[in-house]
Length: 467
Image (cartoon, rainbow, N blue to C red; front, side, top):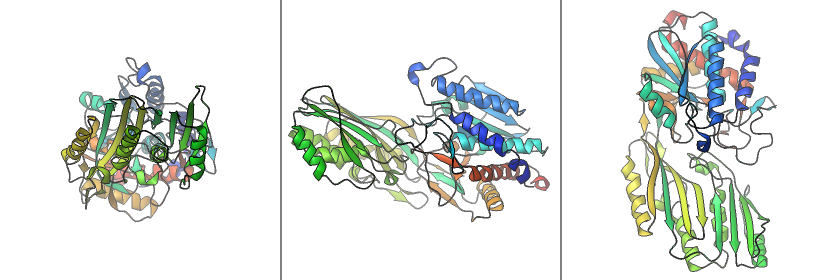
């Protein structure tokens, strides 16, 4: 049984809901965390707003102390749909206000439109369509709303200790058709203090999150003639999409430069152009001290060398999930200290220490401290499982497109379930604007995705005659 007309009639309500949710700036704000709002007031507001919408629809809702919440219908065993309402910082380069939910050319723009407010709300509206059509289900369907997916999963750790864990489910937070395998994830911090202060490098700052390719890097230097820097900028060859400009500083004998690149998701560093790396490459052309050049060379040789871990000797791959990826997501360098954070996605047949130990050896050779900020093990559900096959059938029946299962480097809440996979919303061949400026979701795809999710719920949770 398909619910096309039921879902089509919800179009305007779905659009309005996604716009309203985007307009809540739900970026993590630890500084203003409080009981009931552990990740800040913006995330609290977005969670409460979404739970309130579920309550308006007649579902059972629960707020788990601000760490997460859920919206549920039906009876029986539990089917989980795991989305999140927190977003990464907006960054630069937007053509529309990033929290406007603006509609342009049939698309809804805004941070979270695609990752993951839009898809989470399509799942909610799919549940509503089934409820309004009075289709009986054999399972409880629970939409779980996370609040710290982009920063470390403290939300899900807390929620799963307090609440029932679904045995099967999907995360509407990646790509179609079905992602059955997700690489392991390591976020590592390397830091050290300089034995001798740098004479020229006052500050190099780029990136806000490990899992985002930095699109801006700001540099302050001193003790180098402005004419030298200007001439070097003229002579330096940047690739398309990368630029540098002189900024203004109030301190005499200091010059500021701003480098701009192209942002991308940290699991796909090859899709971006890392502003930090281009800034360091340019700085190498300046008359810096030997200590400064040595530090730049270390960063460019190791985390900055290639997209697949070549610089640390960890360019691993396997058949189920492909190549390891490595992103230099944050660099904070001053005259006295350096700190950088890398995002690594490693293939499903490898273990954490296969990656950590080679990096540890290189870090120790340069007296860097090495710390694990966060980690997630790899996750794999067989392609022939009932879960994967049910979702592939829903996708094919609704879209008419070829169904197939594949692996990704991105980490979704699917890993939190014994049998969990990622399922949409990006369709094959479409650009993936997750974590990028002008993030959007097309209205046409919103409706198709809602229909796919409704059919998937029926395939998994309804009697055969009601599917």
